[in-house]
Image (cartoon, rainbow, N blue to C red; front, side, top):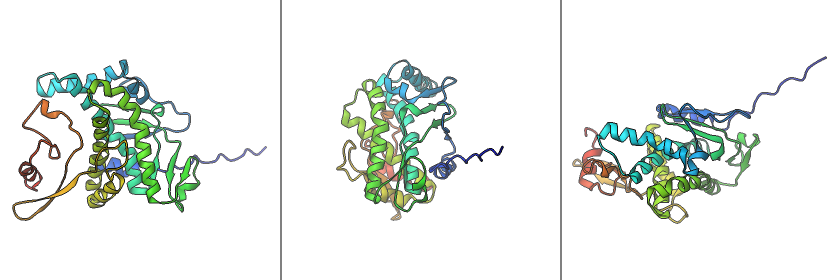
Amino acid sequence: MTLPALLPAPASPVADAYARLTEAYPGLSLRELGPGEPVPAGEGWFGTAGLAEGGADLDAFLAWDMEQVRRDYGEDARPDVIATFGLHRYLWPTLLLITVPWFLRRRVPRLSPSSMSFRRTPGQIAFRITEFSCLPGDPAARLPGARVVPDDAALRDEVRAAVAAHAEPLLAGFGPRMRRGRRALWGMVTDEIVEGLWYIGETLGEGQRAMTELQELLPGTVKPYVGTPGFRLLSGPAGEQLPTRDRASCCLFYTLRPDDTCVTCPRTCDADRVAQLLPNA
């Protein structure tokens, strides 16, 4: 009796993009789950769906941020500050799983909260992708779960929709602890999209293209996102052109160290930005 040959598992449409992502950002470890493989739980893993519920799982998740602040700064932070730190540390790497495949391969995966888990130390994300969007002519269009859209504008719509679908439940869970309105919360999501992809683009030597494509992705008129990427150029003392941006939200780090703000913080004046951005700073 001749047994039928086993068909190879379909290739992941995003594996190569994620390989480049982890090369550019080695502090992140990604684990794409196969069909039927359980989402990790316990031993420091937090399911995204549990975080979105805003209960005991979120309490345990934010305990890491509370302990980190006490250890590094010798004081307690306000609960809304802790929640803001926790959401930032979740969204910044997680949204790269959507934006980087779009940027590198013009493929946009959907990330369901029910099929995703996050581990704080070391930075690990486990996830399953069953659906993604791509352009006509992409060889991946033949893979299971592919959704072909007509052009780049439609693919940008898919990026915005995929981010919103993943972020909305998280904002429902974190939002009440952050004491911010809906506009401020979506301003934070906007910032996480921009600063994450801009950083990876710079690391890959494609910072200018990342800036251009982010401006097209977030023109300032698409809800629920807030504002544009806010890129602008500053001039250094010798005429250097120094790119910066104006954030749509605040990370609240100033509540711990008022004089140690980040270079894109609305509280950081242009003179201080230039000093931080100069090559020998």
